[in-house]
Image 1 (cartoon, rainbow, N blue to C red):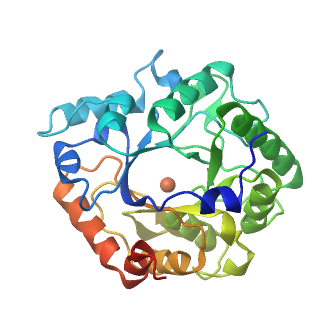
Image 2 (spheres, helix red, strand yellow):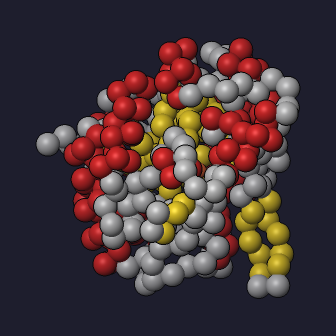
Image 3 (cartoon, protein in one colour):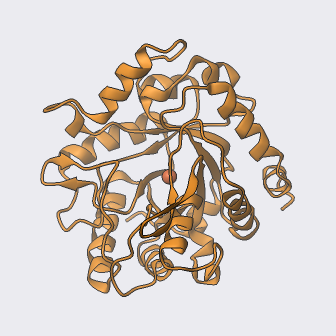
Length: 310
Ligand SMILES: [Fe+2]
């Protein structure tokens, strides 16, 4: 049985600063630039569930982008032939009681083989209901002991079947359900299964805002040696009828300063951090994303991490 956890993550190379995209977001300027500012591409594997039935969001995005200049249609194996690719999935759905299907895992196993990704990143959340994908509005899961047991079982099975680590991403959280602290949930899940944690700064900020806490509150409860990856993206904080919310808009929007402060904090404290991904789903202006990546690389904490002098 494969074992994961801090030693596995420590043995991996530092992948650097990359871009997180759906296949439909791929632009020739990103491909031409790397290596340079873009060290890798984290690509979201389109779900088999988008291939049938009503037009899926991925297809709609692709059709929109097809009208824009410079966007290229390439599948993950093609990109992996030229660039380093990490895989983000949408099919594991590990907090849901039904384990992932053999078909979903077979697709992911192929991507693991062709990309040699060391992990499969996916947000913890309910992505699927019956046969339908509910993303981008996937539902918050109850933070409870029972959910933890279900999730750990599914994560163990996925890791066993794929032979690489699962990388549990902290999900967007506008609503807190359950009686466990989310950081304790991730700490117990990672320690029980050896899976990694992807720290999405905007998602964590949304949780802190939802529970009325400061952005870095309770960071001592995080499973630091298991944090492998940071996600960062454009977004904003908005005041609505029921209070403040973080809007995880991705795309071309600027990154708000509190997210960059949180990123620095994680870079300084996560000993096995291996990748920082700027997510640009739906971005239309590649020059802006490239400039943003250069800015992230130039931050003193990130530069020290890249240089191995942290
Ligand atoms: Fe993310």
